[in-house]
Length: 349
Image (cartoon, rainbow, N blue to C red; front, side):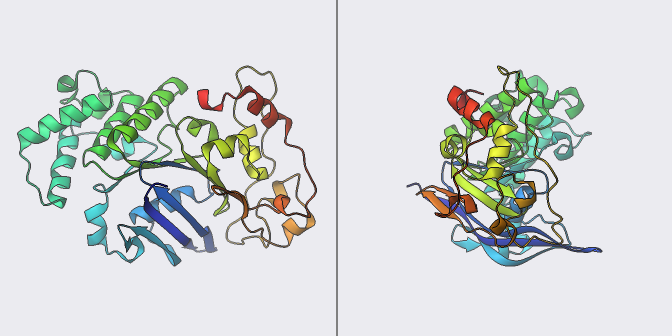
């Protein structure tokens, strides 16, 4: 098995608010392997972005982490000072966000923003780099991420780029320090489907060429079908199912995963998309049992009383659902998932 490059253990993140404590992430654990893409999938508010920000030490001031470890290079990042974090943030672990304009300075030319990142990260590694060398590296990286005519584009401002091209610039800045881990927080949400696919393929290619490890945050399972090696499905601050991409798409076990899969559009079907009834729970008051139970048509009495443990489906596949208990009744997969699995087109989207 590949080397573990990042290990999250029993991570809990709370937020103090005027109306009470929000339990955003509740005791989650996962490993990221070298050269792997791990997708963390779930609805808004599930805790996936909070998890990624905890890894980089960029939580909001009202956040508190009462327990957990985030192990990188044999050190617990949760014990790092801001000075320590600055040595790895944007250097060994980089991040790209949903809206590229929030990451780019609108009144500074693209080229300067890339070269500044190159020079700053060189200093973090105790290296010296001239402006000419930084320029040459910036042109090379712009070419690598698919920016046409990089010498011309170097002197343009962000508003002169399309949304997809701006996201490519953000990716260029993120990989300028050759990071070991790239965190992608919903990087394609604001893009149309065609551009979305191109950006995903760019990230996939860069991961392979640079031997990076990628954490891909998204609310859309369909987006990661052709990108992720492994998938962690989050709901109400917990990971409810974890497995290889193929296991999650073709042998999922948790009703919430079924619901997410059922919402993937099928261009060849006239069937109406299935929505998930109800709303996620108020995480100021975490439920006693399975948090998904009120929205789960397969819920049993025990789902409302006791939180399910992880049941082992395979050495790489776990799901926290009482449906996997030996005494649970057999249930039939939703028709929508049967149809999609029979077509076998997940990895072609």
